[in-house]
Image (tube, rainbow, N blue to C red; front, side, top):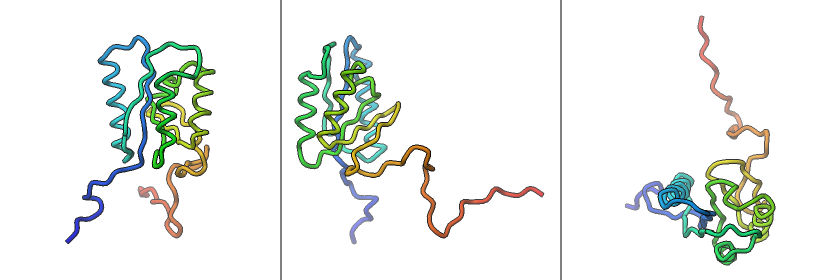
Length: 148
């Protein structure tokens, strides 16, 4: 008899991490990489690799970011996971990098911080102001106990 699906080892969508680490200690790098791995574990994603940008450059082009864009072009790649939006770089650099990631058709996932909208063809996102939980038709939310 086959085990239940919940007991089988299955892989989730493929994602790649991206870290911008300029003058960061080795311990901080280990902690940030671990946070990406834990986020992926919690959300059933497969972290296929982490690209690390160690340069304080003035534009969106770097070896690490170019490598990230290359893997985003591969079939079955779902998205990019970052510890926070600041890992994309300074404001203008981050905006251009975000645009390039979205143009590649990838979803941008943040461990913490503001969540950006994702491309329509990648999963479902909850619109701002919507309830976090879906209501099941025909089922009312649990009522508060009456004290009386």
